[in-house]
Structure formats: C-alpha cells, structure tokens
Length: 405
Image (cartoon, rainbow, N blue to C red; front, side, top):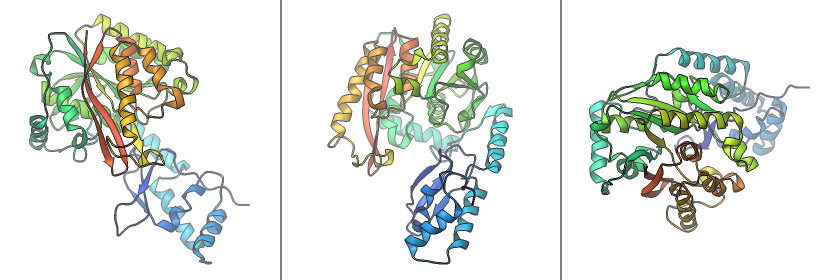
C-alpha cells in the first residue's frame, strides 16, 4: 500500500490567479522560506485538498481521472507532486532543512534588512520621502492637545490603502522626539500563539538604520524567558513593525532608537474566555512590560495594528464593500471596542473580542490588549477610522489613535 503524500504546508497563501493567461490558483509562502510563486491550473487545483497527509498518489490519480475523464494521467500527477515538493510547498524533510537554514541565517545577521521595500513602499530613499510627503499633504490633520501624548496607534495595512490614517497618526511626531526610545508593538501574523518575538538587530530601511535598545530587549527576555522567542524569524518577514519604522524615520529622523516587539495571537484566551494574562508566560511578559514603562518614562509607544478583516478573502460567504450593508454593523462594533480602550477598560475590551473567537478578526488585538494591560493610565483618543477594500470583495478596517496620560 502506498504511503500518504506529504501535506501542503498549512501557512501557505492560496488565492485565485489574477493573470488571465495563467488561470487557476497561486501558492505563495508568506514566511519566505520559498521565494517562488506556484501557479496551479484549475484541474490540478482540485487535487490540492488531497495533500493533507492522509491521501496517496493513487488517490490523487483517481480523483483527477474522475474529474477530467483522462485515463493516462499518472505522469502529470507525478510531475505535479515533484514540482510542489522541489519548490518547498510540501512538508518534507528537505523543506525542514531549508526552513532551519533560513532561520539560522536570520539569527546570525547583525541587521534586519527591509523585507517590503520595493513592494510595500518605494525602495529608493528620495522616492520614499516624496511618497510619504505627498500622502501627508493630502491628509486632513487634527488640532493639537495640551495633554501629554505617550503613544500612537497606526495601521499596518499597505501604505497605499491606509495613507490617511498613517499620516494622521504620525502628525504629532517630529525631530523633538529624537532622544526618545520608541517601543513598537506590532502584530505577529505568523508568530507562535502566546509568545512575543524579540530581536537585537537594528532595522534598516531606505531612510537609514534604526538601532535597537538592546538593554531593554534583554531585560524583557530575562523577566519572561518562557514567553519570548529570541531572534524571532518572524521579524525577518513581518510588515507590522517595518512600516512603523519607515514612518517614524521620516517623522523623527533616520537614526531613531526602537524596541521592536512582535505580539503573537492570544489563542488560549480567545478559546477559553480567560483573559490573556491568565496564561502564566503572557502575564509575566505583560507585567515586565509595565515595569519597564514605569522605570523608563522617556519611552514612547507605537502600536502597528489593523482592526476588522471581513469578506471573501477571509472566508466569509458574503462579499464585503467598505461602509456598505453589513459593514455599517462592523463600524459600530469596531467603535464599541475602541470605546472600551478609551475608558481604560482592558477587561471590557477583551469581553467584546473573545466571543466566537473574535469573528471580526482584529489582527491588532494582541498589541492593543498588551498595551492596555501594561499601561492602563494611557487612554486613546480616536483620530480617524477607515474601512478599505483590500480587494473587490474584502475589507480591512483600521484607525489612527493618540494615547494620553
């Protein structure tokens, strides 16, 4: 009896091809262990669910024979399996070796190089400055406040989509903040649940090199080693912090000092209904974050967060159009959560998030809760709120907020 085929890697992005000359589906590795895209024709795409670690080559052949009516299809199936395996899209021993090599390479680097220059934003420094300045000029700006600003929350969506909220969030920051250390709490889209990703590497962008507050990194690691992934590979590919560094460098200066923290999902809390800090490792890290803030009042905090994710891209049966139909209810629910944060009510915020394991899919939940718990005296003021169609059938919401004490 044949052995089961290796399964597809679960973290792969699989989406319909937009190329009319190459119909079907595209496989992409968001973790960048694999640098190529795979285009899977429509007929072969029907077999992808069989790559689950339980079905065999013969199962795939039989399935495709029934679908296509082709009898002699074994050679095509063998080529398909070989292509998926050699490209690194299947969980094979060869892929595991590649994965460990990529992780080791990142751990040994001294600098975190930009992962999204040239795709998320211009890679030429002058073009990037012009890009950011042009958007900033178009954004309606709010008035100033006499209260002490201690943090901002900005989107981490594509700058092309979230430019108004980015510009509004970074409006108060300028060169007068150059001596501050900026703690950046970013969503870890692919990080381990109940873990926080740290790195000692400086972040390079086309605008310069942002150094890292290594002493604070080590302090957090010592305080909660079981909840920390040190030199987390997710830093290599994650955009939620990289985009903040770019905007921060343009607002304050290219050689800013940062403390980058990737916040993994709080799945235990969402599944159990118990607050995130009830998981011992998470509680120790959040307490350590609070003590760090008390000991270093010069810290300034940035949260790289998006809010709801609604529509076809995210598995919903009903397509989503920004500010239309049921997206009005999404707006109301988004604002209700923000109101709990504005009241300094971290527990009440969690109580609105955890039912149905967060059906709004706030990918910024972990950073927002971490800050609300560790800095309860900082209360956000909503500066802007937007819904944006990331594709014709899917919407992401995000906001700009300023935290005052």
